[in-house]
Length: 368
Image (cartoon, rainbow, N blue to C red; front, top):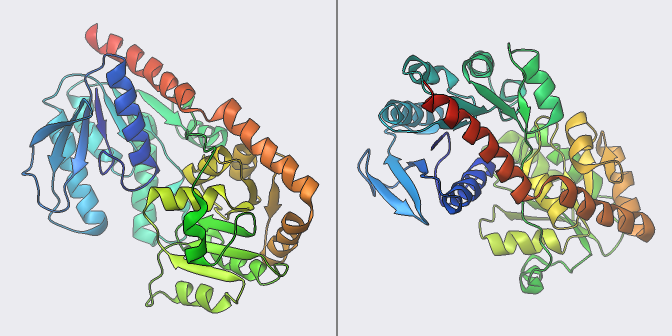
């Protein structure tokens, strides 16, 4: 089987890359032959070069352009190449679903993860939103199987498709320990800070969370991880709103440090307003974090009823004070996080569900 739509494996970027990493290695242990398309950004490989990693086949392609155009160029190269490969195709994301017409013309079986509602994100301009909306419609109807990672995404896709999607959420490992040695570097103590790990964007409610953190009780801090750009007006407003109780360490890519900052936090701050089962929120549940999340249907389902929710900066401030002072409510939320993760977001559950779909589609393709 072939995996298209990520930067490749091993994972070094976002949620889809982590998922492709876990799924590809899992399938290899189950006897599958797996090919993952990888974007070569440093010129190490010529287009079409194939190699092996952890028993997983990799096919490398480069993009001459940067940004969204580079992503489109890479995706088109992958789709053209996969037409020559055996097996079924798992496409992660619908952002270039129009290219999958080529796969359908070759009568290939396509399974597509529909991701979030990309065209609703405020960061995109009009042309980009039209592109994403068009590709969402194409992907939902072009794929033989559309997979949604959240019940609300499944409803959204169902309203735009002639067939019902399958709901399979995202997964993560349970984190039961992490070295606290790195905390001193950021001026925080275990259990005495709240942490946010997200892109610094308006739709992630970063400003509201920073404003809310201004009223944290003495001795507590908020750690806001993420890359800041001095030329970005929103980033500058967020930075200006942070007082002594807010720490901005920048973007951190070392998994051990990120894991430690998440595990030792008193609570995880999750301001995402749009999307499905967000990987960072699932990882927080797996770390046993109490969660303060933006109050919407996506976060409510993922995190569960026993967590803390806010709609604006004032609400965030009030909930942060409760998290810092109400030990019983905090303990209930932490225990609920572990329970929710155990019941719904275990990797073996998620990967097994994907394998079942792949088996069925492979059998169909072999019967043609």
